Length: 87
Image 1 (cartoon, rainbow, N blue to C red):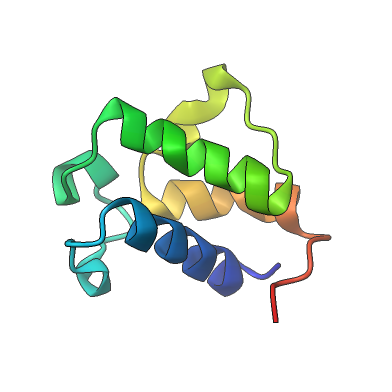
Image 2: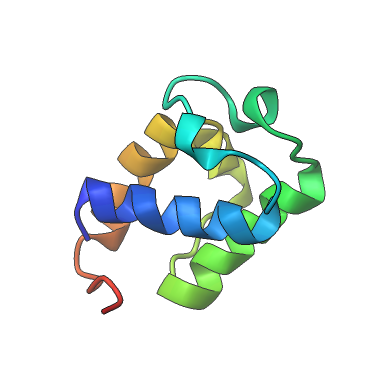
């Protein structure tokens, strides 16, 4: 998957987790928790959705890389490079 496809996949996951948030305004450099109402369980839901949908295993000590959209995309690019984007 390309960085743009990964970003869209994350936005799709976030749309299900926080449906009332305006995700068109997500800033790549600002932590998710500062931009929207996310608690620790919501964050774990993001990790679980990545595992379920894309079979991406993220060790707990690496969750910090998913703090922002930009960080999450950069972290996921090498881990999702061989995954085909859903049609």
